Image (cartoon, rainbow, N blue to C red; front, top):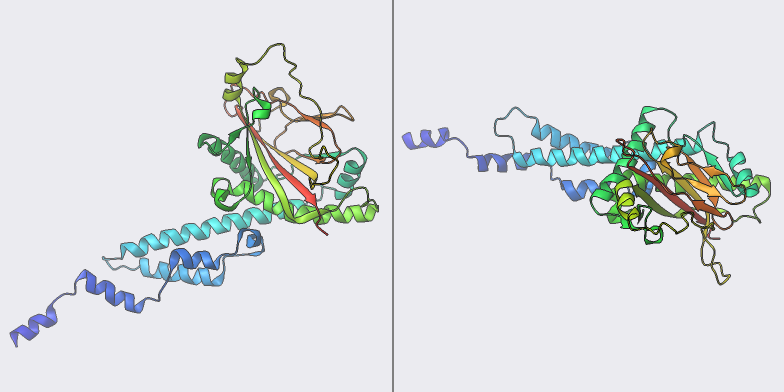
Length: 341
């Protein structure tokens, strides 16, 4: 009898408690399961909020890890942290893609008719405050994009532009995939702009009845590139430059095959300048168009649209300043390609 009473009073071990809780808890494959519930990058924008299934799984994790039991499962706490981080990351991406779409489609001051006419007549179009109109989300987005440029430079994710030695410029392609983690906001900018700009621009071409002069743009594919300027690199290379060499680079078009073929499908190029708010004309950068002689300075959040196959232009060198925040600037470039009929 005494032994039976002791057996009844014996406390369960931690291992036995975990097994008991595991029987009551639904099976959750957090890492892979949550990822499977999330749409791919080109579908994120259509998601208005995190899917119900993901929310249910996160709720289960929260319920299991916020109990008052002193021996809360450490593994469940770690699972909750991973799930919350993943959901927050998705929300940020959805917000970014949606915001850019609205800036492209619903900006009352951006006239696509004016843009199309200017590109067809002069070969280029300039628009200021493309991603932000002094609103907090837009300003933060621009700062995040510029910070991604700085981080990639610091982590050796960029390559020196050997065609512009002495100018302190670096290059990389914006392709998503494995490199998405290096620059999520820049990648989402390319994705959203590629999807939403061409349909509006093509519509204006139809209305102007001049589509034979310029091929329509594809809304499913583009080429993304990032140029980053670093003042320290330029200063270091300037000591090796030839003082008798002409500092001005020649004019030229973005695409065009020397053999007369049509292998280069780029038709319109969008250059978005990213820099500190204090960046001004004395800091350099920007482009000069040969036909008009107009110089378009690299103002923060200014977008320049160039007709890739015919507009001759020259990229102007960056200079920056030793003042804080003026030692780095960049240009996010999206090459729209011709529509694949």
